[in-house]
Length: 148
Image (tube, rainbow, N blue to C red; front, side, top):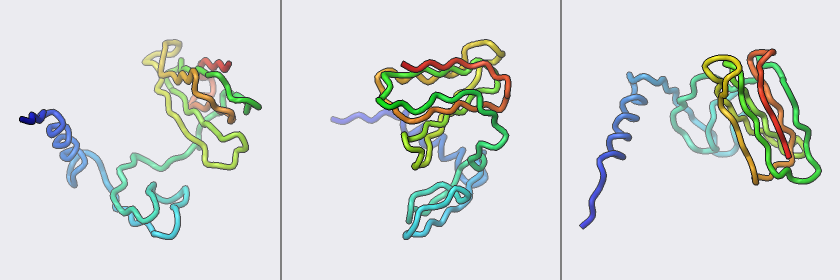
């Protein structure tokens, strides 16, 4: 005899209420051509995958200040740790070694007060040879970064 939990069903119900038309989240229809990927100014989707865009705003690094750059390494790093220590938080940009591909962005939330421990990214044992740039909306944001 198989027993099913009601928790997953309840989670889907709550998500459906929040994301349904008239719910809390705003959705825009996205129609994607089958022959090409979308550009940076277009809504995020895979080729030929129509659907709804629930993004809060367009992706951008405008208005952010570059705080630090960990240069690309010639050999994979053994690890790195980056921690937000200001209320403004951080945006990490992880490039590939040559800088030819689209970067990966990671947002770290800041602490409730400046100087506290906010979000952190610890990648011990996860090799990454590309450049790591650290941005914040505050030019005087306190942060910690270490690579080994």
